[in-house]
Length: 186
Image (cartoon, rainbow, N blue to C red; front, side):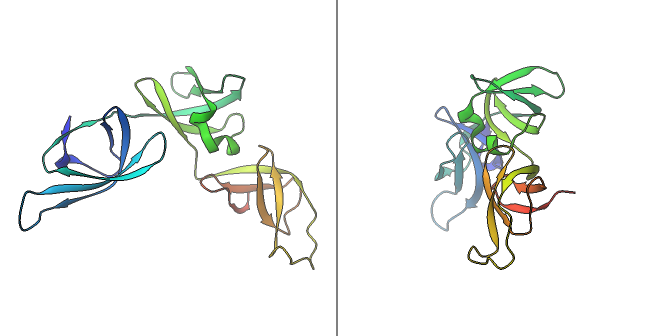
C-alpha cells in the first residue's frame, strides 16, 4: 500500500482488480482547493492508455511485478515454453500473452517475462535481435520503384523491408518493437 505522493514512472498499480503501469504523473497544487495527482496509466494486459486523477495522499495498491530472466525453449500446441535462467523451472505461456514477440523469437532466445502472482503478463525481448533471411528476391540496381527496399522473409516467418543490397542467407538486426531493419549483424 502506498500513497499517490509515492508514485514513480514505471510503477505498477492494482486498481479495481486490473494492473496499470504509471506512464507519467504530475503533482498539481492549484491556488484554490486541495492538491491532486494527474496520471497517465497504461493497462499492462491490453496496452490501453487512460488518464486518471487522484486526490493527493490517497492510498493506492502497488502490484509487485517480478521480472524474470528466461530462455525460450520451444513452441507446442499449448503455447510457448520458457525456462527460468536461475531456477531452471519451465513455464508455458499462451500465444496471446507472448503477442508480437513471437515474430522475433528463435529457440534459446533470452527474454524477460513479467510475472504477477504466478501468472505471466508479458514477454519483453531485447531491443534488437539477429535473424537470418530465408528468402528475398535479388535486388536489381536500376530498380528504384520501391524506394530502394524489398521484402525479405526471416527465419521466424515474418516479412520485413530490407535494402536492395541485402542477399538471401544474410543475418540482419531487426528492431523487436516495430520490425524495422537496423543493419547487418556482425
